[in-house]
Length: 487
Image 1 (cartoon, rainbow, N blue to C red):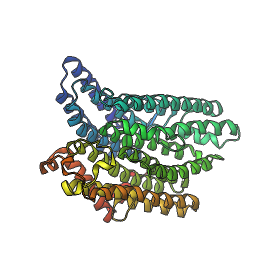
Image 2 (image 1 turned 120 degrees about the vertical axis):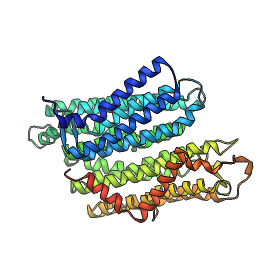
Image 3 (image 1 turned 30 degrees about the vertical axis):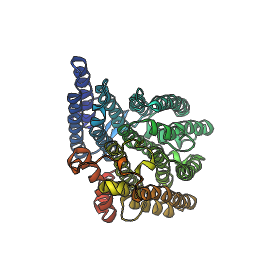
Image 4 (image 1 turned 90 degrees about the vertical axis):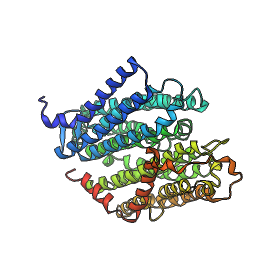
């Protein structure tokens, strides 16, 4: 293999991330300094984000046999890096209150980000497995990072670790069955081999079903969703932000590449299985959220429902460019709303006193003391509900149009029914914000200077984008069309 200039540019984000990880390890070994390590992480992630500009200009680059770097993979990688950068910004004030072991948080986050970037470009089952584990294993430490002060954090870390290991075992067993039947682990070669008459279909279907179990766990799809609300509740808000958005975006990007390259939806029974999972995720995720009093658990069940919605795209599988465009819009919509919601949760630590900031009841009357925060929460909840004039509505419109044009009537009906159920618990949170407060002493006075802080700027910008792109979505649509150009 000859390593050329285009391949070097394609791997530039990986090289930068690996270099930053080594620098951080050396820095921690020499002298612990929270500010220095946070600065290294933020500067490093900014450089990686900037390097993606050069990759977009290069075009499609194959790094046989493991990776394929193109515009969709660059798009998913950019979102992972962006969320990681925002996680550092929101985690810094929270980590400043911890007395020890603050620096390792950024190291774990950077390693997980490296796994997510590689995962977005995986074109081989070996690269897929290694990058997925590289992303998942640091998350086990991040979830349990505050186990000394938060008793449910250790429980969440154990659940995620054990179930993640089981999902990996399913993935490896499924991969072994595929290799035994096809003799290849390359996505494209696998797609060509599947259509040959020499394939033993029962074992092929079994292999893909086992791999599907692993993907369903990572994406929190029913019936492999049970870990999600507990892990979200036990994680700190910045960790929940990364877990709910960056890790799932990277996994879904790899899942889309596998579906398109290997054409596994055309295998008998796979389409029906995906349809059942999508309907169950849309309905059960929303129904379970109705009875939750913890806002992180609500966001957990909401995530289950949202990826059930997005799974409609995988089942439709008509024109590849149209599907990738719909994925890009839905992923951006989910990212804005999810990151915005977890960002506001981290800000609430400065506002609510004598109460658990994760309980929905703690937000009663927030509008009368901190109106801007209440408005930001309202915009995010309306976007997650898919209400008109928000970016979430554009996402739901794309999904419904795709479902109807593909004659997926049961999935379209489940989308409408699930969204209708979701409106109830989102509006419940919004109404609580504007009720008269029980006691004004439950809230700290919050200076308006918080808006000028990095966290304040981010949550305000995300809420503004959710509204502006909901009213005028053309910039987002053009971005999605640019992503799928030459795909």
